[in-house]
Image 1 (cartoon, one colour):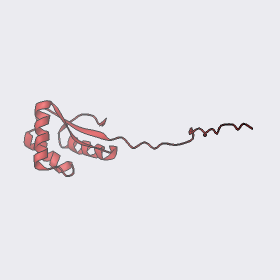
Image 2 (image 1 turned 45 degrees about the horizontal axis):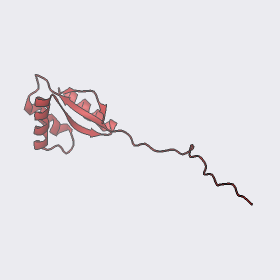
Image 3 (image 1 turned 180 degrees about the vertical axis):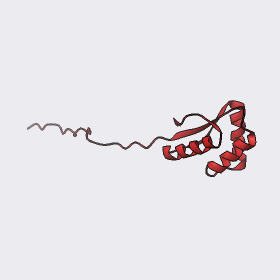
Image 4 (image 1 turned 135 degrees about the vertical axis):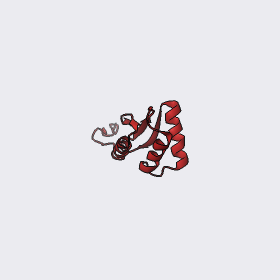
Length: 97
């Protein structure tokens, strides 16, 4: 007596959870913000930003034209982007990391 092979049910109904994407906050170089102002803004608005890291990023903005200063969830990225923009920094649009 032959038996039919066992067939696993399709997994079409399964839902796979995707993590929310991270976003990059990018400061752009300009001709009117001073090194001191950019560095101070980074320390003021980006959590856990040290003075040394702020100066590294400020130099990167100046010499490379831009620097990613923070990466994380969209809502926080929007807040930091808005705060830095209101402080007068030139910002790139938010983009997925």
